[in-house]
Image (cartoon, rainbow over all chains, first blue to last red; front, side):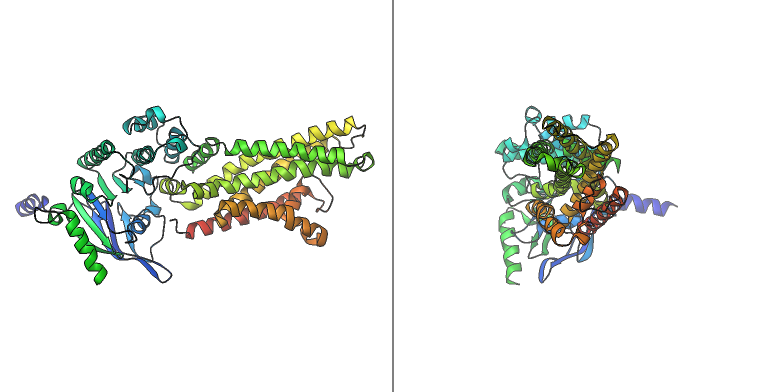
Length: 254
Length: 246
C-alpha cells in the first residue's frame, strides 16, 4: 500500500499532465505538394507555445488541420482527446483566430460577437465583458470596416475568448498592434496560461516571442525542426533569432 | 441546432444585405408591373391568363430570384469575407450549418415571396382598373398567387443555399442564378417547352396557378420544386463537408 502512494507522490511533479492538444504524424498533401509531413507535438496546460517557421513552412496548414477546417491526408490532431469536428460547442474549449480580417465589413463589432455568442449559446452579457476586456467598448457599435488592423486583432481575440476556453490558438495576433498593444497582448496570454490555459501562438516577431513564450516549436518545410523550452534555444550564447535561422537553414539544405 | 439557427438569423439581420436586396426586389417588381401593365394593350390584358402572367412574372419571378440570391449569399458572403472560419470554428458540424442556413433562408424567402407577389398583385390590379380593364381573378386566385409566390421563393432560397455551398464564389453564384433564370430557362421555354415545364423557375410559376407553359397542377409544382431544393441542399452538404477551407 505504501509503495504506490510514495511512487505517485514522488513522480507526480515529473509526470506530464494530460496534453490538451495532441498532434501525431499529421500530414497534408495537396496533389503533389506536401504542405506538412509527419508533424507531431503536444501542448500542456499552463504553457504558452510559440509556433515559428518561414512563410510557407506549413504553420497555417497545421492550425487549420488542428481546428478541423481541413482534413489531414494522414495522422491526427486531437483536442481533449477528440478531433475538432467531433466537438460540441468547441468554442467553450478552444478559442482561435486564424486571420485578422474575418469579419463582415458592414457588421458592427458587437454584432459580430453576438453572432458568435449565439452559435455557442453563450450568455449575451459576455459580449459586453469581452468588448471591455479588449478595449473596444466605445467602438462596438461601429461597422468593422471602420476599424484599424489593431482593432480587428482585438475584436478577433475577443471572439476567441468569448467562450471562456481552455485553449487559445492565434495566428500572428501581434500584427498591427502598437507597442502598448503588443505588451497588452503579452499580458493577456501570460494571464491565460497562468490560469491553467494552453496557448499556441504563431509569429514572425522573434524578439516578441522570446519575451512571451515558454516553449518553441519551429516548423520548416513542413516538418518540426525544434520542439524545446525557450531557454534551450535562447541563451546568453545565442539569441532565438540565431537558433531559428540556423535550424531553418539546415532543414533547407537537407 | 437551435444555437446554429439563432446565429444564422442574427447574421441575416445584422448586415444591410437583406434590406438592400428587399429594396431592389420591390423596385424591380414595380418597374416590371408598370412596363407590362401599361405596355400591353387592353385587349391583351382583358384575358385572365395574361392578367395572372403579369402578376406572376413580376411578383413570383423576382421574389424567387432575390430569394435565391439571399440563400446563395448566406454561404458565399461568409466565404468572401472570411467569416466562414469563425462560423466553422464555432460549429464544425458542417451539415448543421447548411441546414441552419436553409431554415433561415426559408423564412426570408417566404417574406420575399409574399411581398413580391403582394406588391405585384396590388399595383397590377390598380393599373388594370385605372385602364378600365375588368379583373377576372377571384379571391382564390389571389390567394393561390400569394401562397404560391411565397412557397416558390422559400424553395428558391433553399436552392440558393445549396448552389452557394457548391460554387462558393459569390459572383459565380449570382451569375449562375441570373443566367439560369433569365437566359437558359427562357430559351428552353421557347425551344423545348416539354422540358422547361419541369425546370425550377417554371415550376415556381406553376405553384402560383399560372398555366402558360407550366404543368397545370400547383401542388405537383410545389412537390417537384421541393425535390430540387432537397437535392441542392444534399449536394451542398456533401461538397461543404469534403471541402478544405483555407
